[in-house]
Length: 269
Image (tube, rainbow, N blue to C red; front, side, top):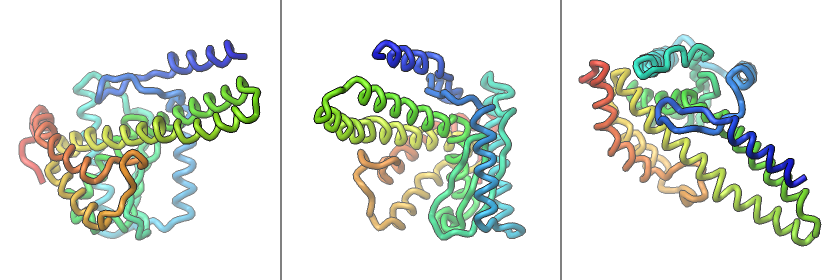
């Protein structure tokens, strides 16, 4: 049994690697587009039947327009950097949904939702582009599939422990320690790394789309002010702290402008 579990883990770890075109690093991904995209598209369609999408308004049109510009910029970058056809399986869709939650999200394959509650924080089209770039970046980097893959490995580790440990007291201690440890030391840092990666990629593609990347740090200053300073410690959160994001985005903005200049973009909205 030990050998079987080890072989499974090694096989998954070796065979499930895919290169992130924006970082050049290998990423864990056990789920091909052909498997995960149809599931994501179906879930997105189901969500829209259960929630009120806003249509025909200036704000709804802005969400679509910004999304299309950001996705087009991403395709330009990918094609120029040796990844033509990378987005062939993507089916971009952008919906504004009536909900006061301050949030936006993206499902694998490019299905994006903005809640109306985040629009005041965005404070205009460029702010929308900051959030849109971040959400599009999650899709480009296959973060959804990576989270599912990490969850599978986490489950395999738990099963392995329960198979190998026979003493009930030791098993109880293992399950408690593994649950907390794999979350705080594994899943949470993994999630924060995705958020940081999406911030950086998003900043780059919003600049290529013609939006001023300096606005990203300003948006997170507004987000921080809106939160009233209430947030869990960073090590216990799925996201970097507001201060960490503001510092990162401020540092990366000149680099995003330099990348945009390679595509002839030197002035920004």
